[in-house]
Length: 152
Image 1 (tube, one colour):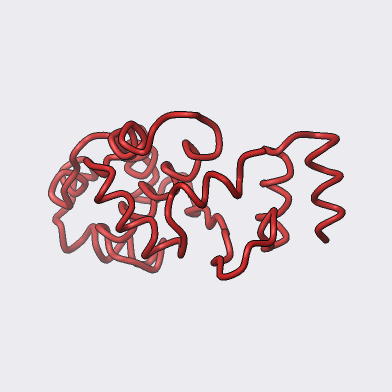
Image 2: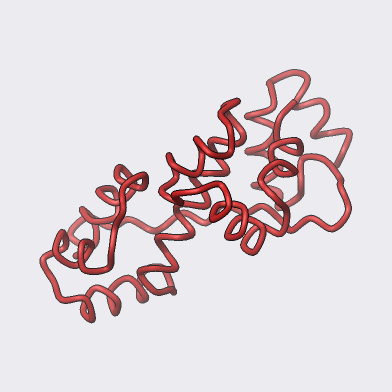
């Protein structure tokens, strides 16, 4: 598997190799103690009450958002939003939002040379300290380690 990913990286670049590695549920490089890096997309269905909300949130991850903000945008109560979001994603609105912010940070770590401070702001985490804490707890490695793993 390592040789295969090395060849894909060499022939098609690290972005494609990372996508392939995620699809195969393997890390693109072996480095002991790492968590698996799997992207789980949120199912989107036309006509679903959250069909417009989830993309709206994704465009505003860098902004402060509360459950009340999400509920207001979806034209429903916070409790009703929580029920719908749990049925679609299997998690609470705040946990879903945190997961999306972590994924945005992963994307930026993989594709930019921005500092962790800049990435924390762009992902809506506020400070580098907050990003590091949530990132390490969620992904299992600090942002700098993640970047070294997923960058050529």
